[in-house]
Structures are given as structure tokens and as C-alpha cells.
Length: 126
Image 1 (spheres, helix red, strand yellow):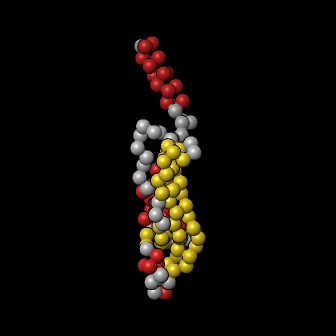
Image 2 (cartoon, rainbow, N blue to C red):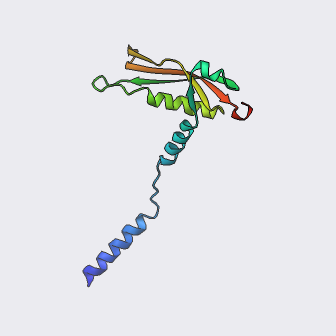
Image 3 (cartoon, rainbow, N blue to C red):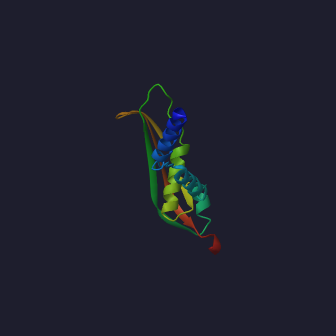
């Protein structure tokens, strides 16, 4: 009987100790940024000129890869970030300049750099 009371007491103590535990996640941020990036399309300069497009500015992203033994990532995450930045500016289109991959740049074993022009296309006025 005493053993049973001890087990119940420990269980109550354990459960009451968990009441202040808070779990956080960045899943919502990740999902939101994924949706933002999907709302922005990539166009060539010739294509963007055929639309009623307003230039919003230049956006750029860099990634410094420091692990020489592991291969550097692709440009895909940088392009996604360019699209997110464009969406934050109120845009829905980018004209992507050629991305650069620079070996042994400063403290980076590889530097990845992408630039784009951000635009807002008015599809209602086309």
C-alpha cells in the first residue's frame, strides 16, 4: 500500500512539474515563408517588360559555406529568400541575375551569392 502511495505521489509530482513546460516550433514561420515564396514568380527581363510591372528595387542574398569537407548547398534556398524579400516589398515577380559561386572567399570555403530585381505586376491592368 505504501509503495502504491509513493507511485501515485511521484506521478502527481511529475505531472504538476510539466504544467509549465512550453513547446515552441518554427513550423508556422517555415510554412508562411514557403507560401510567400510561392506567390512570387521568376521572369526574364524580356518577359517582365510585356507586363504592367513596377520596379520595386534590388534584392540580394549570400551564403558563406565554411565546411570544406561538405559540398556547398545549391542556389535554391537563396532564390527562395529573394522571393520572400520581394514579397515583403509588395512584389510578385523577380528577374533573377546569374548567381555566383566563389571559392575561397574570405573566411568562406565557398560563397554563394544571388541578386534579383523585384517587381510588382498588375495583372488587372494587363
